[in-house]
Length: 287
Image 1 (tube, rainbow, N blue to C red):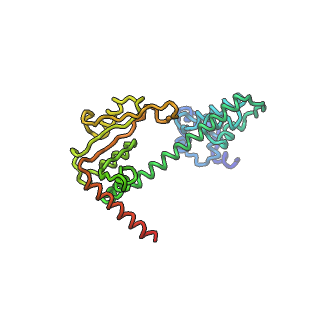
Image 2 (cartoon, helix red, strand yellow):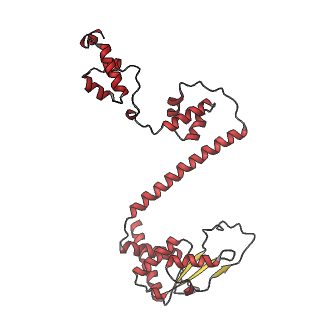
Image 3 (cartoon, rainbow, N blue to C red):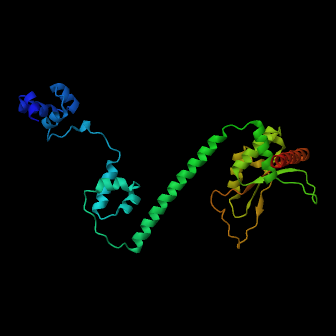
């Protein structure tokens, strides 16, 4: 280092200038340029003991987590407990608290162990739900726009799965669709519109358990399909069976909506024919 001091003959004088500039709030780069000191070792010696001004410190998003981790460690928490509490990695925790004394191990109470396990399981469930939602969003984006033919084929399959069908022992060629899923109702109505079925040919009726709030349910479906509630057919009520362990009893239970197409015999026959054609094509592909 002697050759450096030789280069800067008045080291103490230079240090006084550097310290004064530092206390005025200048950064290392600004001091270096002002004093023409191009050697980092020399600059370190000139500023030794002088803290950097606050404005030069980069904010650290993890400072709060780090401080909290250190507080918990001083209280005797383990890495596992801190990880569950703060949601950060053990490697980060280890880096933040490695200079602190290791807490004495003590046997957890049953309640403590249960609480830790519960928080860990809740964290796992949150991660699973995030992954579930991400997968659903990604899949939804894959659909983009349906072509008319895609909607047509989907509608045929949807009706044949959920709609009423004529039987050899009970010839009823009518178009009736019943479902509890508002999304299914939306798709079915879009399909009927694609087929040119006029809105005035449609009739709606609610089917629901008698213990439900019938008026609010009817209003829900009325809003969903965009038809006045007064035009709905009489609601069908299912009798209450005390021995049945029903799950659909919360505020989001809206029963089922029945959609009837008036004068629908010809449409039903075409649906049956379309479905038969799809089955034939499926057989050809699997032959």
